[in-house]
Image (cartoon, rainbow over all chains, first blue to last red; front, side):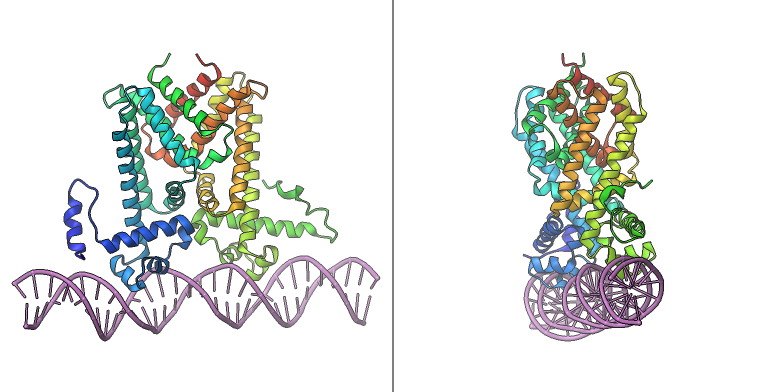
Length: 208
Length: 208
DNA sequence: TCAGAATTAGGTCGATTGACCTACAGCGTC
DNA sequence: GACGCTGTAGGTCAATCGACCTAATTCTGA
């Protein structure tokens, strides 16, 4: 049941992901993420985390000796999960053509922003925090680098012209993130935006 | 630099020396915006505002009776200034072709995000706050509606096919906002992203 | 079985916060 | 000269914060 930190280092060595941390640590990070989403950076306090997790303040501080440690671990886990979500999506859809794959990916990406999902709320907080926190900023940048490459791989494969690959990444990543904060102010419904963006991706793949 | 708030009705107040009040209010809002940018929502406190503005806490509270009132006034003023900036930009550039105007606008828009400008830092904070604050969210949505329409007007004029107008807005606005948080993770330098985005806008104007 | 490590309980501490309050100076008006 | 309003000063208040501390308790491995 318990077994905590000694194993942490061991597991983390392997291929850099998905380490099994203790149950309590997971509960703490769950609560921290939830609090960040609901109340923002200012509302994310050690006491509220303890309250939400059903433990004492000192116990939370036993697992994470400072608030900043909670933040770091929380961000690390969150971006890993987002990456895993994308990988799952790309494995699920066997669409045969680049256009079909692009459209499927784009619809999924935009629908997150459309509904102001939990994920988007969390990212808004992380963007703000990353303005002032180098560690969070580095995690975000690394996540985006990986995420955008995975998207382009899915849509057009990995062995096409690298310049085309780069352009697809440089279109999809900013657009997805920006859509999540501007969706409510756009004149077109999501479906039409998705169609337009799909067309734009295709125009990159086959320039006139 | 200021010139924004004059129109809000403070002038035609009965008591004399009404401009005194306006001046102090502006100083307070300047300090609040600066604090938001530097220290985030959590670091924006009434006492720090007073400290920065060189007045007593009670004096700040005389002009804005609660922290939330400061926030509202600050956001109102900020989005007004950003809109004025865009209008200035569109008036300055007399480029004759849609492509030249689009490129000029895009270069300006992306360069903000590229350098993590003050404006971008503030918007990151506002996005986070707007997840939990209806008033801020409404101000942001209104700003984006107006801003994206101004951009499309500038690039293609106001009397083209409304569907084309809507598509240009729906491409530029999300991309600009998203670029400001993903620029560091994109494989292409800003210039190439600007060229690509310009091409994409033109492909919307003249579909094959 | 039992020493020591892992975990939990229950505080204390100084610092900071927003809201609120009273006092008072300067001013124009009645 | 009394009054009312604006603006400023200075302070109180309960609430909350992160960090830290000590002691008890539970678990584990030799």
